[in-house]
Length: 130
Image 1 (cartoon, rainbow, N blue to C red):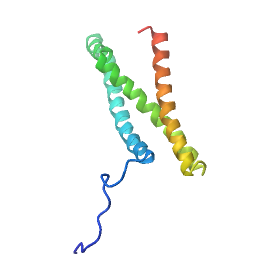
Image 2: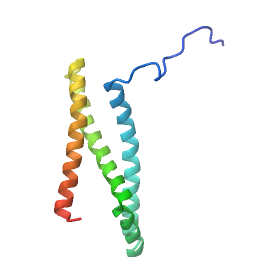
Image 3: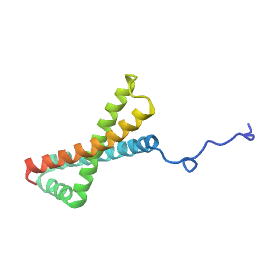
Image 4: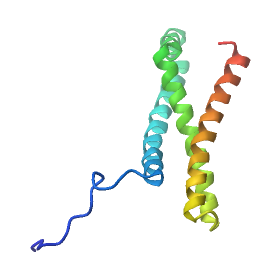
């Protein structure tokens, strides 16, 4: 079987990044971050079941600046997935499919995700006193 002179599919370097493609790529990155964060949650739960010494070690890691940054990223990934999922449900209903609506809802997903994540962290710190 020969390839002949068929054109190759355009690569990402050919196209100028657009909001829709950037949000699609971000959605996949956030999916990976959600998976990694879930593994950290499982690690924390296993540590809690393994005894005080191991739990304290995991807790001190998650309380460090890097651990808190990871937890913040995981929270952002979860919230972004939720907001974008609602956006897709709206599309599944056949609404908001025109380009101006797609751009507006994409920008709204990013802004609402950031605001909800920050709000959750402010709430957690005000209730938990961490």
